[in-house]
Length: 218
Length: 262
Ligand SMILES: Nc1ncnc2c1ncn2[C@@H]1O[C@H](COP(=O)(O)OP(=O)(O)OP(=O)(O)O)[C@@H](O)[C@H]1O
Ligand SMILES: [Mg+2]
Image: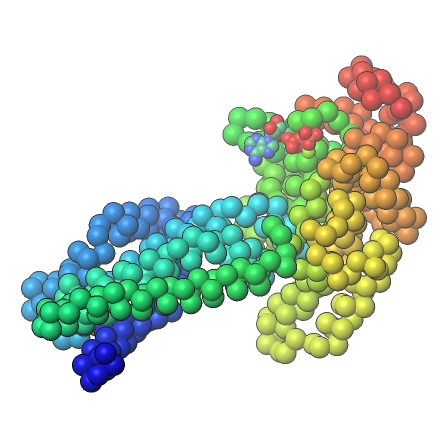
């Protein structure tokens, strides 16, 4: 069974997985901090900014990611005569915006759950708003949001398969090509194992982080 | 001159007049107890002194200098408010320790962050020696509140009484001119109130100026230099503990004192 066919299929799937991994990691690294900015916007005391941000979040969360990917890819070409050359870049932009919106809501939930007394204790100790957020509140928020965050990250792994809608060759597309061309079914199951292993590792990582933050309560 | 002078201070939440013209003075080294029924505005008064709330009118003077002046139109910046706050410390009813820091770190944090902030303003590097001093100071304070054994514990590992003593050490670390307590023992089991009140008594002996909102009438009677009884957003009666508790003039005070029978 482990003939050259197996290895060439393996190689094709690996390449697909490479795109999946790239999409996953760049989206994560960019949307986690961007989500915090969006979150600040949605909690701003300046009401125009707050409303604008909340409408933005509503639109992004209320429409399918697949549609957003298509819009980012086709809009510049069809509306402004500047077709997008780099398909992966278009997918990344759509994913980063989409996930920033989702993460921002997770952050907001976490921040709003921190007791007011934590802020006030910081204030009466003469701390600046920045110090209160970064030195007191942030890690408590992180501890609270770890579970929803890990759900969202695992969803991201699976969402990467949407990139194929504009013909980016991620893992599922690679598998489907093989199935269609070579009439083999096992690569589909094999592909499933890629996702399972990857998500398994992520679950372990989140578990380790949770354990690390277990040293305090609250 | 009085250390603290509060003049005609008012505070409204919407239509509700929570403070209706509060006047009092406090001398350096004195202990002022504020008593009164629920909703009379005691917490609001402390929060105004600590700039957690902005009064609607009136004045707060510290050694004659206005910290708050309701008549002045000048805007105060966040940095100015931070400076003003440092004249006061506040110990909350429910402690509000920072859960992710050890007892020792809870006490050093604000001192260290202030050094960092000052360094940033003055465009210099934070002074390492200062951090070492802060650490020593924190250890000393924790020893004074009887917690030298607990410096490396986290707040969740402590009893309520211990947590409140950490909160007191944390407030003392910044050397406020006036230390305020908002019902420091109300969240504690009865058997734990003693250890916290003992610490406050000891502070009195070292001439720390304090304002204590309390329902512990016995404590107010024996520890205060001055007692204020608040009712409905006003000061109904004030004076020495003997005057307020043993010989109250106002019928409302009389009723309150009788109810809380010493
Ligand atoms: N943020 C707020 N918004 C609206 N009303 C408030 C607010 N804070 C306090 N109040 C009201 O102001 C009044 C005085 O409250 P305050 O907390 O100062 O009373 P207190 O004397 O400390 O009472 P207690 O003994 O129960 O602690 C109450 O009627 C309360 O409902
Ligand atoms: Mg109160």
